[in-house]
Figure 1 (cartoon, rainbow, N blue to C red):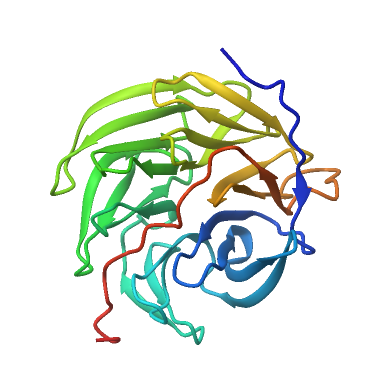
Figure 2 (spheres, rainbow, N blue to C red):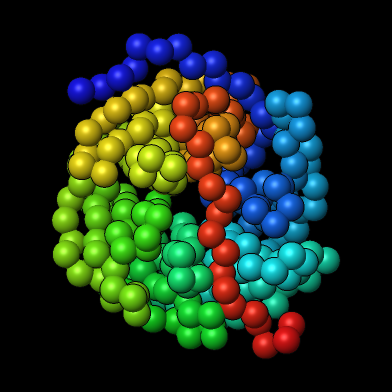
Length: 295
């Protein structure tokens, strides 16, 4: 059963239009917002003020940037997936390597996020598109562990509040949300399909305080809310064709979008959008690591 009758007002939050904005993150340390522009390799930070985003620091991190994760301590910066590995981006915009060589030559790191135990989970995407990539977790000590192989385009992931369930999207070829059981040491088991996502490509994902999953659906011009059992609860139409990812800043659903590949992009394509929803979310879980050069 789909609940889509309630009217939602979608607002444009950003004055800037991006090529491929992705991976919005609500920073629980200072309340700010971070996001990336994948196609330009740039990491952005800003703050929400009066219904719009006030831009803050912006730094080019690499050729192909993936997901950012805040470190736990205020002032400790961010871990950012970029190109074939993970780097640290300091609050002074210095960039230093943490892990190198995760993705194979020609591939690059993509979406990711942290679990309640403080591990940074991030996957790669295949170029060309075949199933030779992986999903990794990075321990607090900086050690990478391959958690899942046979991945094509590693995209949205979200953990439930206990960390015992991982919801995961490998966009191709199945266009589905999957779930795994997560052991305390991070081992995955019990792989199962939650639901298929029709009408577009499932991309970035977040989880709200009721345990429901919000998913950006590329080329469908929608964000959708699914139950953990796979029921489509709500679909919100957007003025942008290619939503890429979502984050909940309390009850404001922030949506990144892309203008890449569109012959006639609208004013909303490539913008960050926002819509008020009924159930909020929590700030992005932090990576509990501390790079050796900071300790």
